Image (cartoon, rainbow, N blue to C red; front, side):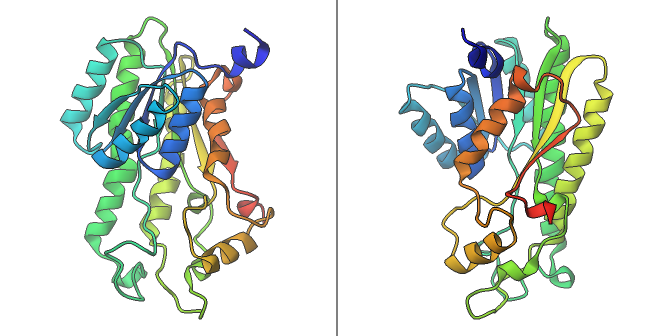
Length: 276
């Protein structure tokens, strides 16, 4: 085994990825698989999860696929305890989240997402998915890690640039400068809260082998309009959006021994968005 395989390799490590059917969840799953990890993939969207599994099958990887709503406390605990009884859990990537976009079917008016028009039920939905769901599965996984012989593991929480700075609402205008929608406040609130959760949980496990870090990615291209891409790119130092695959190396780093002296930290990869 060469140096890179020794430091970045994930052979014999079992990693749970939530939101695995999403854009970045799929990227993370592929990167972790190529580094040698055994994967347990979770998503509430069965079709998206199975598509991710099919893509991994094409590179001779057979992950365990589990359909689950992470806000269902009993189901999550049953699933995680079952996984733990069948072997160790070495890592958890909390990628599942609600991320409101301008093309969502429920965004029907030009004021969609505006603060004084924003529905309370949407606020609660974001809190449940982006914070409570992460709390539930992290608590369950930490319980397994505490009982393991190694008593160690890694948790990575997916934050956002909008958890660090307020949303730039001007990038959500079309070519004619018409506001399509507003990035709602709950997204920023939950992502900022997740960063606080990361630091608090890392501190709680001081002196143990359980590490907790955050990854803050910038915007990744996903069939966005040319107007959006141009506006977004203009806000970054690198002058472009990210290719989703550019986040694969980061997740391998955070889940591997390469980040062994890192906990309670936030790895920001945003093309320079938050630097200016």
